[in-house]
Image (cartoon, rainbow, N blue to C red):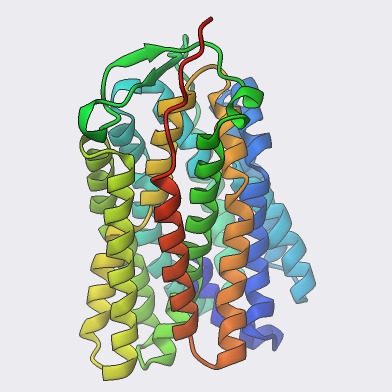
Length: 384
C-alpha cells in the first residue's frame, strides 16, 4: 500500500504519465495474483516457514535493486517483477490459509486476527515512508524497506507452521443462512473436484471484482487528495489512518462473518466502502476537508474485508489437505483484478482529468463483488 507514497515522486523523476507509473504497481499486484496457485502449492508442500522467509529474501533483493533503477523499465523489472514475486509469498493468501487451518471452528475471527498485521503495518509504514521520501527520496525509502523485510520477517517466521494434523472439516450452513453451524467431515476435496462446483467460480468472481476496487483506491487516493488541496503529509496520514481504522474493521468483519454469515457481512462492508468513496466526491465539490475523515472511517472499516470473507467461505467448503492449493487458484483472479484497478485509476485520470470517474468504476466493481458472494452455495455432499 505504501507505493502510493512513491507514486507522485516517480511521476516527477521519470517524467512519465500516471498510467505508466501505475503499471509498476500493477506488475506487483498481477504477480501476487498469478502466483496464487504456485504459492498455495508451495505452502502445502514446503510449509509456511520456508515460504515466508524465502519470499522476504527475494523481495528484499528486488527492493535493493529497484533503489538503483535508472529508468521506468528498470523499475518495472526490479520492483514490479522481482519484488512482486517475493511479496506474493508474503501476502494475505498464505497467512489466511494458515489461520483457517488452525481454527476451523472460528475461521472468520481467526483470519481477521491474523490479518490485523496488514492494517497495522500500513498504518505505521505509510507515514514513515512519506517522511523518508520527503527527506531522503524514494531510493532510500526502498533500501530501508529491504532492510526491514529481512530484519522483521526472517526471525518472526522462525517457528511458523501448520497444524501437525490438518483438520479436514467443513462447516455446514446453520438455519437462517449462517455458516457457523455444525461441522461435517470431508476428506476428498481436490483442485479438480473443487473446480467442478459453481461455488468455486463465484468465489473467483468475488476476488476479481474486489481486487479491481480496493487497489485502485489505495494507489490513487493520495494523489487525488493532493490534487484536491490536501498536503502530501496529511494525505499520507489519512491513507495510513485508513489502515488503522481497518484494524477494528477486520475484527468486526471476522465477528460478523461468524455470526451473520459471509454474504451479509460482505454486503455491509462494501456498502461502507461505497459510502466512504462518496465522501471523497463531496471533498471535491465542497472543499471541506472533513469529508476526508468520513472516507477514512467508512472506507477503513471495509479495508481487508474481502480477503477475510472469501478465505472463510472457501474454507467452509473446501478445507482439507489441498486447501492451500484450492485457495491459491481462487486467488489467481486477484492479480488481474488488482493490476486492472491500479492501472485503470491512472488511465481514467489521464483520459478525463479527474478521479471521480475512477471512483465510479470502483463502486460498480463493489456491486459486482457483492452480487457474486450471494451466489456461492454449499455443494451437495457426495457419498464416499
